[in-house]
Length: 315
Image (cartoon, rainbow, N blue to C red):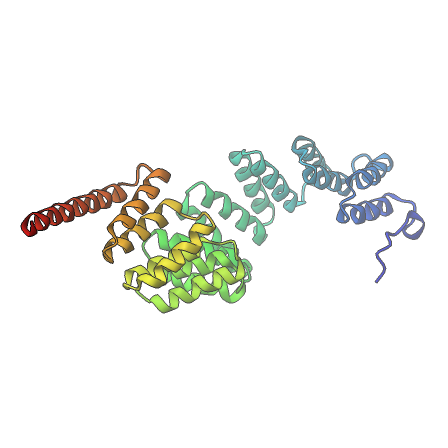
């Protein structure tokens, strides 16, 4: 297949030909030439919705959101039935932080085309980010009903169920999401957390390992694996995981604290104190580290007193 762009000679000389070439240029990232072709189409037909739509996409890609909104509005003036253009407006308003306007555009898209699954998904994502979990769940379920292949919708339903204390549903939704999209690292991580809460440690660890294989930069999985090992009293393995997380600068204070707890449990009090101090240097508000530091310091002082008493007895 040739990478050569079609020419107007290949496509013809009308507005449709200019738009076809403009879309090809946009796909190649040539925004200037793509816009020139769209504007040429508008010269032939100033109200042509597809030309305004193309210019809206170009301006969105360039981060010129005000101009993008103007062109999307013009496209809708030319053809009010284009429900999915409202979703493009919703995405622009989301980028601008204008959530109310984005929600309104999603509502318009659904009003014009109730079966537009992507509109329900976009609405659900907005509600989820706003913390409106019940409303988000309703929209996610409708999105999944319309398009069962929406893995992200199933995952978010799992997150909402987890936040609402319904662990069984949360696990089922995360697994459903992973059947659709096995390489969703965030779903692997969340499923690992849920399995860890059920004390299914081996299964949880498998999910954390899978998350790291998918996304090597997901260092939080090492920290969580360390916590699994720590809870089982496997201190050597836990220490290894915490060290890897520290190397990636993940949960630095918490890792130092946990490593300190391991040292303390194994009687290495001065090493423990150094780790607790490192944790508090990162997070002075980490109250458990302050408590453990006080206990370790008291233990060292007690040992010193005992040693001094033993030395006096010998002398």
